[in-house]
Image (cartoon, rainbow, N blue to C red; front, side):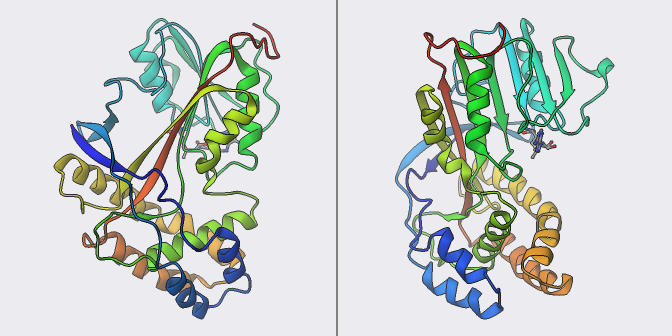
Length: 320
Ligand SMILES: C[S@@+](CC[C@H](N)C(=O)[O-])C[C@H]1O[C@@H](n2cnc3c(N)ncnc32)[C@H](O)[C@@H]1O
C-alpha cells in the first residue's frame, strides 16, 4: 500500500486546447517549439493524498480495498459495464459479487468464451452511443477507459442515467490525455511528451472527440441529474520515477502500456490529420520514447474516477 499525491487543479496550463488547435492547424515543426515555450508555466500540484494497493503486479485503489467501484455497492443487483473490452472488469466484478447479474457491452465480441466465465456474467455486442434498448434497468452502470472513443460523453451519461433504477449508481473511470508534472521536479513542461499529447488531442478533436473529456464527467453527471456526484483524481506515473516503491511499480506498468501503445496511438491520427509522413511520426516518437524512459521526468497522467446516484424519486425511462 502506498500514498500518492493527487492534483485537484493541476490539469490546467496557460495554453488552452483552442490555442493548441490553432498551433496545429497547418501544422509545422516550428509550431512545436513555440508551444513549448508558451506552456512552461503549468500549475503544480496540491498536497492531497490517495492510497493504493499493489498486488500480483496489479494496482488497486484502497478507498475500499477489494472493491472494483469507488461507489458503494450492496452486493446484489443488475450491473451494466459499457465499453467492456475484454470484459476483465465485468468478470472480476461478477466473481467478487456472485449475487450480482453483470452484463458487459462492447462493439467487439472479444470477451472469453462462456465456459471460462462466471455464470452471473454475460456479454452483448452493441454501440454504446446508439440509443440503449435494455429491457430492464440497472442498479449500477460502470464505464472505464472509453475516452478515446466517445463522440458525445454527455449523451452517454444521460443514457446511463435513464438506464438506472431510482437510487442506482453510475461510475466512470478515465484518464485525461494531458500529462502533468510532479511538484518539485526540475523538468520544464513543454517537451516531446507534452507536444505529442497535444498533437493527439488536436487530431482527436478533428475526429470529433475530446481526449480531456474526463475532466468534465463530474459536471456532465450533475447536468444529467445525478446526485452526490464525487470525483477522485488519481495519477499514473509515466515510469518508475516515484520514490515510493508501490507507486514506482505502477509507473513501470504504465511505462510499458505507453511504450506499447505509441505507434498504434500515433500513426493514423498524425498521418491523417497532421499530414505527416510515417518517417516524421517515427522521428517524434523517438523523442517521446526517450522521455517515457527518463526517470528524471516526474510526469503522470491524471485518472478521473467519478460516481453519482440517480435520485430515488426519479422514475427515469425504460422498463424495470
Ligand atoms: C480501452 S478499451 C476499455 C475496455 C474496458 N472498459 C476496460 O477498462 O478494460 C475501450 C473499449 O471501448 C469499446 N468501444 C469503443 N467505442 C464503443 C462504442 N461506441 N460502443 C461500444 N463499445 C465501444 C472498444 O471496443 C474497447 O473495447
